[in-house]
Length: 176
Image (cartoon, rainbow, N blue to C red; front, side, top):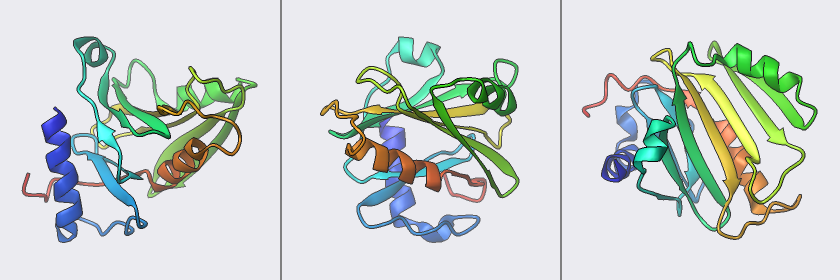
């Protein structure tokens, strides 16, 4: 799995003309990550390392996990009958410790939230959207090796940049 994501990352960096629709260029120091089956596309710092998934991770729907000293990122997949974006949004809007922002991008609803009661062991920031395959995807951002989460910690800037970059991408035209 790690090799798959590494190969996909290299393909994303080397073959921008393969996109069905041209994405925004990644800022200096950032690279695109994607999950082709769901069409989920976002950027991460270029020093992000992907980690191997355990059988336990896979059983919880985790399809990607990685990070660097400043942040940890996790991508999970849910069947639509488990949770929908709208149900999750409604749940968050009733949570007093969640600062919620809903974005509409190319006809898709992307729900972003910040945990205002953050701790070193809690999810700090999350993004949820429906993939092109009909499944629900959740990107969770936690502290990195530094465990820094105070208001000026790098993790918050990273989380916001990832959230701003999330989009859906049709990968069916790609030679993979």
